[in-house]
Length: 191
Image (cartoon, rainbow, N blue to C red; front, side, top):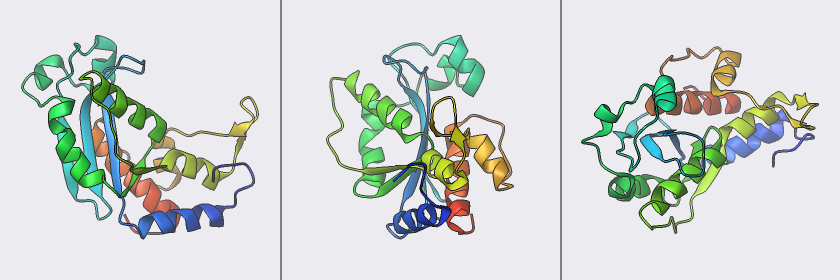
């Protein structure tokens, strides 16, 4: 779907198909970006904006100061929170067999898998993640000449493009709401 010759209308049509399938939107905050990092917060909202999950998650490893500086989630804040494996059944309930919109889906899906792998578990379900970041990039249609691919935009940039008020929190629930608003703006739905 996501290539340089995609028209805005094709992106809108793709998004409308996803919208008709009753999507949810998901975002995470993590201990970092590496292959051994894990989730410390997750949020899921439905297409109407109802918060389904907004939970801190206790990781096995301490949250490094570099991550705390970004999302302001401290080790003290998560000490009594569920682990990822404990909250996974609740997450599954909302994402099973539904399209799941994420901004930079590749990252969030990878971190969910990593967080399960820490407990020697795997994610064995099929959910249909769709990447709102890639959709927005195709919608804008700007080429990054250095990468020779569609230009990628930060979530805040996408929100500003549509005039959406931007929260200043780097927290999962706010980023999930912003992802939903960007997706709805792409397809012409109120947010």
